Image (cartoon, rainbow, N blue to C red):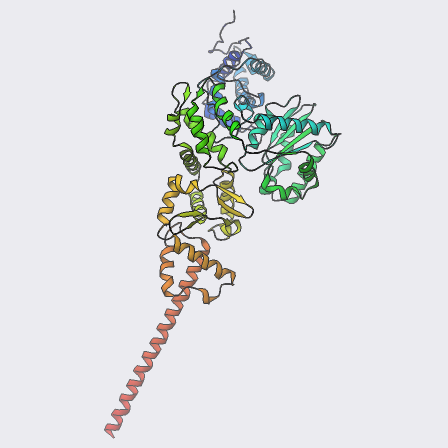
Length: 562
């Protein structure tokens, strides 16, 4: 009869079930003195490969309790490495410690055996990913993309059988779900290939070499490159970009060893950039697929089936109302899927027993409430200076009409040039685009959706504060831009009457941009000069009048005396 693990000394547990994996995992924690999870997380996440999903306290808790088995060994390996390293140090002083707990090969075998078992339904497991993209670990909860997943697998197989460069492009608008399909649809089900995942940064060549160095497989590799548009946003050195693409071509060549298939996910907004490279343009024409927004039947699957996979059910009325509410966001909107997943996660938190109800959904505030919560969550992670920039950008992207405030696209270059700190604003703006608070359309920046104007209380408050001054702000900003366009002539500077309103405006924090401040400051300086000049002239006139009066008095006095 199998004995339970000795949690006090870390004795071996020979069971190879999912429960066995969790028991041994918990025993390993005990062996190293049950260190704080936060310290383990810091050390483990420092070992996570670039582009991989960070390890969380919840995942470690699930693995220890047996609620789930890691979907890939790589996902748990960083934690094991941290614990094993500490365990080996302790084992040098305590011979009673079970050495099998410190053997990575044994852990890999335990994981494989645990993964071979059927998944146990757990109603306490979160079935939705909220604002996060699906990762390989979430594959058993990834629904609604069967057609796209099949198409991508077919495209990968066709590329490998073509005898040409095995490079596939996964195209789609930002927020449509490319990262989730890449991870939960392909990385989690690579077939006989060894998956390698990476995300480009400012030095994509180094990131590529690092990702490849972590894989020693001699079989076919599957290189998954997420957020390929970063080649054009984060990598500013053209030579590095060319070198990276040249290395991709060599890796995916039909005679390369080991053979490698590459799947590159790219935002369709960057198709013009892709056309500048022959390798990528060939892939666009011959080996690419466009991931379309999810249709209603697919959305139904994404709502119902993750809940069913964890032993829950969803009320029919909730499904209908949720799909109806979701039409506020059109199918191409970049936050549509994230908002759906977020509101589902919030509804799950409010569930009644094993059922996700319409009442629980309404308690979350619905789609509009989820949109507001998402915005506030992003805001809470900003520094004070970042918040100043965000407020500047958000209010700059609005225009006050006679009865309401509307979103108003502004050229990106204008936002940067008129900001207090263009370099820092560029960094914060990139983060806002990444977090999908705003979107870039061609050369313009605009709010992700008009919902932000009415649903996010913080934005509503800003607009209320700006209401009295918004028309004046817009007029002064337009005048300042014209002043710059015409090479800053004095004739366009404000005179005393208009200057009073402008001076009041620039004293309000967050209400104006750098260009407006400069325009008003120069107008004020010119006005002061003019006032000073008038005073000098007036003083001279008065002095002259006094002198003439004195002279006249002297002349008259002399005449009388004579």
